[in-house]
Image (cartoon, rainbow, N blue to C red; front, side, top):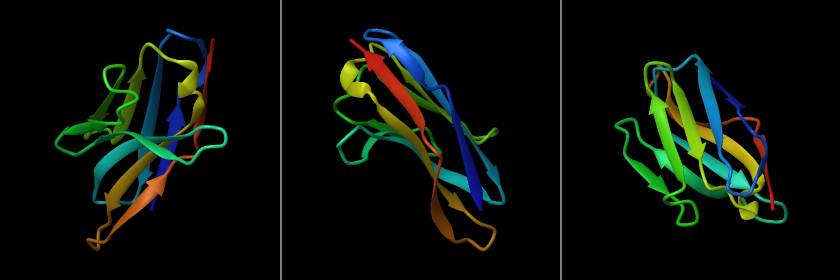
Length: 120
């Protein structure tokens, strides 16, 4: 089992920056991919950024050049630096990871979500 705890959401003006952090804890062998998703009001959840254990990254087109995902494998943490924020970035942001257990099984886990609100 893996528990994900997010922090860093809040209210910011358009053009501003926020940094989200997520820490994984629990019983697992290793964390594979880590990602950030978001769900805006009235919309489906979408992938924002993903980072592999070897630090390969991929981003949604809407955030490329503005958001940066990073991770620390030793601490089992993932962060999302969000710059040049826009009102359309307003959403609940969720941390996600794929973890391998001691029995070699893998599963996906989710954080509780953190609200990001960008005012115009």
